[in-house]
Image (cartoon, rainbow, N blue to C red; front, side, top):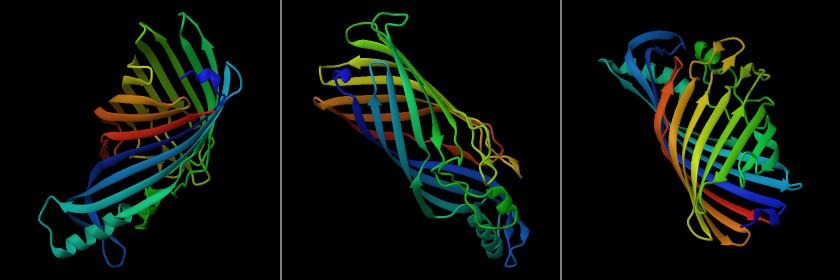
Length: 304
């Protein structure tokens, strides 16, 4: 499709990822008086299914400038259990489960994430004839739900939640894309993105800086069908709390392979499908280790 013929684009994306697992060791429980007591070594295990849907709007002001808005919504379903690594009495199990379930529970959560506003500048034929470069600058709005400091509440034996739907701050966004054809049917591209929180929200939380890089190969299969294969790396730095310091569950790097298809159903309507498979991850925090799972994405784009 010749996108230059259309000034507005509306899109929706739906992604799902199941069995995102995490665990950590524990040596304590909570008795009937809500006091911490020592119990045999056990493990807190969690699994989460994640769904995300987003609605995006983009307006091309002219051949160079565009502005966009993205509204995300999340569903998160969590299962949690306690498993002992050493012999335990029924009372030990009761105390350990009481302590474990102030941290992780069998619950479902849903809500809006942080809305993104972006402005982009496009340049063509830069460095190479037929190339396209786009630089985007923007910010996030604090529309996602945030939680009180879970580490402080945990030390007090109180129920809490480690899941944040947003940062609660206005964060700068930067993204970059450069691509060009190497033949009639094959092109190369590179995409990068950064989110850079620089202050704490009203609950004392500062989100982690986020960096992403993705080189890709694009294929034109037919007049209506195109595909891409890419390698992506995402880095999530350390987040922190005003009173308890660096969040032990932060600090994460993972890389994955992705495959995407796009089919032009009509002249101004595209259907997309994507599959992402993790190939490496490194956790730098001192808290709960977790494992990313494969994800599927479905998208629909309408231009007018």
